[in-house]
Length: 182
Image 1: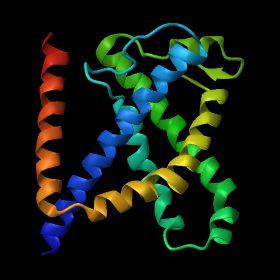
Image 2 (image 1 turned 90 degrees about the vertical axis):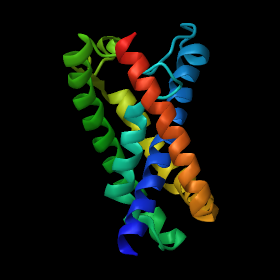
Image 3 (image 1 turned 45 degrees about the horizontal axis):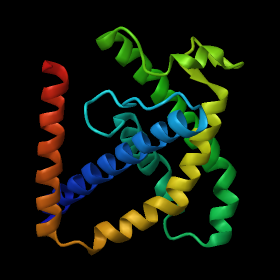
Image 4 (image 1 turned 180 degrees about the horizontal axis):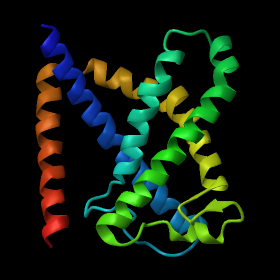
């Protein structure tokens, strides 16, 4: 029974990962098209509409900070807000830095070289301004989006969870193969 529950939790984490990877891709495209007015390009490293770094960031936020907010009063959540902001900012920035090295190793570059134009940056890989946005995004994620997604995931049946996981895992696997072979 415990193994089954853990496996179902793993499936939920996979769907959470994918959901926030897609939301991250939408956020990146929104910035590129509407804010910076650079025009559209696929902001992900894979063919499909997802940026896995956002999925990993979401899971990191869940594992690092979500437990501190679970079953807390609104007053307690407000008191924790600055710490959660700084924590999300730090974790996301670290993930982005590590991801830049991984991308550079496999592809020769990383997708956000525009950080060289930012006043406060490190090797053009990370910068203060995006880090602040990651902290704010973490607050929105942990205080608003994830509680809503938890409610949705807790309402779906195990059968539906299994079907969704199989479908999306298959799509992601095909995308990985397509991306790295073609």
